[in-house]
Length: 96
Image 1: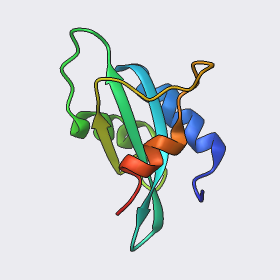
Image 2: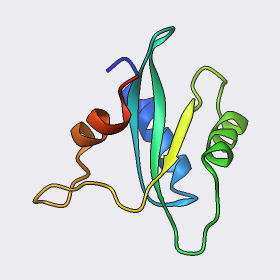
Image 3: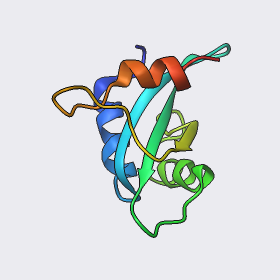
């Protein structure tokens, strides 16, 4: 993955303001190689769009570090110990 771990952690923390659970993955991109994409389960009653989430990160980060895409889902895949399975998210949401 080309996205630095510190950037991924910041994006995950920033998006958690809106989301109940959040994961940031690297999505394949023909121009940049890889771009950051958030997969978010919204807090109950929240009515944000993916565009709102991307705009939030662009407001608080340098443009080249901000999210390029976000997707709102009902549930994130988890393993036996309860950890978010980013490998499953990359398979489903990380391809061009």
